[in-house]
Amino acid sequence: MSGKLDGKSAIVTGAAQGIGKAIAKRLAEDGASVVIADINEDGAKAAAADIGHGAVGVACDVSDPAAVDAMIEGAARGGAPDILVNNAAIVPFIAWDDVDLDHWRKIIDVNLTSVFLTCRKATDMMRAAGRKGTVVNIASNTFFAGTPNMAAYVAAKGGVIGFTRSLATEVGKDGINVNAVSPGLTESDGVKASPHNEAFGFVEMLQAMPGKGQPEQIASVVSFLCSEDAGWMTGQTVNVDAGMVRW
Ligand code: NAD
Ligand code: 4PL
Image (cartoon, rainbow, N blue to C red):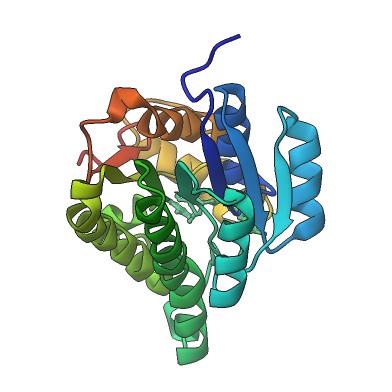
C-alpha cells in the first residue's frame, strides 16, 4: 500500500497518549517510520506496540537539552529526520491566584523552550544532511481565546506561534517548512482526566459545529501539513476547533 508519507522518518513528541498518539498513528498509517518520544517511557513503548507499522517508543524529557539531542540523533540513525512534530506539553488547570514563578517557569520550559530545543537540533541535522524537512508545532486555540485557568500555558502557546513564524523565515531557504496546528478543546487522555473535561458543554456552545473534538481530527490536519500537499505553506497556524474561534 502506498501512503503519502512513504519513506519519511518522523519524530512525534509526547505521543505516549492523547493527541500525540493519534498523530503518531496517523503518520505511521500514511507510511512514515515514526519515533514516539515521551517522558513516559513505558507509555511510549506501549503506544508504539499498539500502533505497529514499525513505530518505536523512546524516553525523552523534551525540556532536557542533552536528552533532546540524544533522542533526535538516535531517531535519525546517521541521517536526519524528515518530519518533527512538537506535541509534548503540560496542560494545566490552575487558578490565576495559584500561578507562581515556579509554575510559570515549568510551563515555559516544557511547552515552549522544548520547541526551541528540538527545532535547534532537528533543523541543524536536516541542513547538515542537505535534506528538506517539515516541522509542525502543536499550539492551542487558547492563544486566540485567552482561556481562563491557563495563563502560563496560553503565554507559552503564543510563544510557539511566534517562534513558528520566525523559524519558518530562518529555514525556508533550506527547504524546511514550519507550521503550527492550534486545536480547540479535544477529548485526549489528559483532558479526560482533568477539570478541562467539564468544559465541553460551554465550548460546544461556542463552536460553529457541534461535537467533542477528537484527537484523530487534529492528527489528519497534522498529516496534511507533513505532506507534499502542504509544501507551499510555511509560517502558518491552522486552527482546528470546529470554529470556536474564527481566525
Ligand atoms: P496529554 O496530557 O493527553 O498528553 C501529553 C503527553 O505529553 C503525555 O504522554 C506526557 O507524558 C507527555 N509529556 C509531558 N511532559 C513531557 C516532557 N517534559 N517531555 C516529553 N513528554 C512529555 O495531552 P493532550 O491533550 O494530548 O495534548 C497534546 C498537545 O495538544 C499539547 O501540546 C497540548 O498543549 C495541545 N492541545 C491540547 C488540547 C486539548 O484540549 N486536549 C487543546 C489544544 C492544544
Ligand atoms: C478551548 O489547549 O483549547 C481547554 C485545555 N479549552 O488545553 C487547551 C480549550 C483547553 C483549549 C484547551
